Length: 92
Image (cartoon, rainbow, N blue to C red; front, side, top):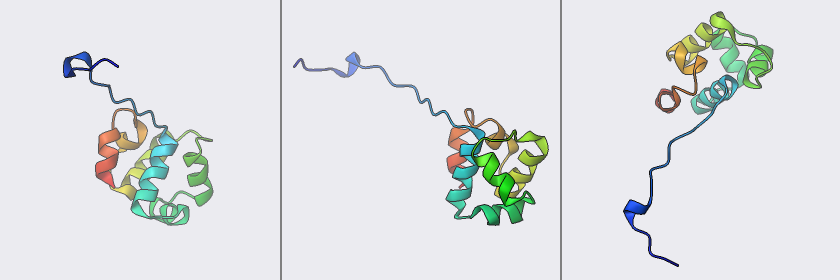
């Protein structure tokens, strides 16, 4: 096996692809909340929280605002997870 030098390698690009539903679930779990607790805090039914987390329904502006308020984060963190991955970690 040939010895590798630092210059032989290129830095990998971070490519975390998350869906909006995965972000909602991640934030909820990092907060230690159940779906029912998030439902109460966001005024969205637990059934709809489940549907959102499983990407079964479109989120829409109103729901994004309700969830962002419950999590105390900017709506873009939920709506555009591919651009806000580092902010999601900070939000928890």
